[in-house]
Structure formats: structure tokens, C-alpha cells
Image (cartoon, rainbow, N blue to C red; front, top):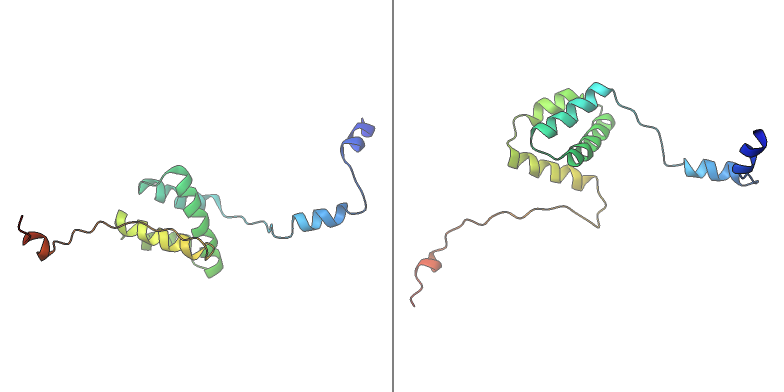
Amino acid sequence: MSSIQTLNKITDSATPTKEFFSRYFNEPISYPSNQVDAVVGFFKNKGFDEVAALSVSTILLQQAKVDQVNVFELLDGLKKYNKLQLNGLVAAILNANRSRLSKLGYKEQDNTAYVEKRNILY
């Protein structure tokens, strides 16, 4: 069996270098499961889809770790926002963590009643 295993694993002199660079930007990141569950659950309860909740939670957990902020305090601060305010905040957070070449946005409904619209004669 050992001969079969060595046949499946092709090695050359560049193998250690390839393995080093394949892991170069992949620093392992871990979070306590209770924090992950709390953040994902918070966004799912606010009406976010499963994938969207996971994406936003990942970014919030990363940023909380960088800023050395307790995730539960962050969630307590987010509870005061309504759904529309939370969507705007999430868009701003995601834009801050994206490339400058692409940004997320949303269209706001223009409910302004203009005077000119009422004075048109046909």
C-alpha cells in the first residue's frame, strides 16, 4: 500500500516552495462558536438570508477582532437600529471591506412632492 500512496503524491524539488506560497495569505482565523452563533442569529432574526447573515457576520467578527471589541457589545449597539438603518449600516461596513473598484448601494424612493407637478395645465 505504501507504493500506491507514493505514486499518488507527486513530489519534486519545488514542492516545499509551492506548499509555502499556497498557505502564504491563508492565516488561520478562529472564533468561539457562541460568538459566531450569536452574530449569525442576530442577522437572521433581522430578516437576512442565511448566506447574507454568514457573510456579514464574518466581516463583523474579523473587524471586531482587529479593533479588539467584544462582539456582544457590538450586537447590543446594533439592536437599536431598525431594519432600514441596519441595511444602510451593513452596506457601509461591506463597502469598507471591499475593493475600491466595486461598491454596494441601494436606491432610495423619492417621495418629494414638487410644486411644478401640480401646476401643469393640459
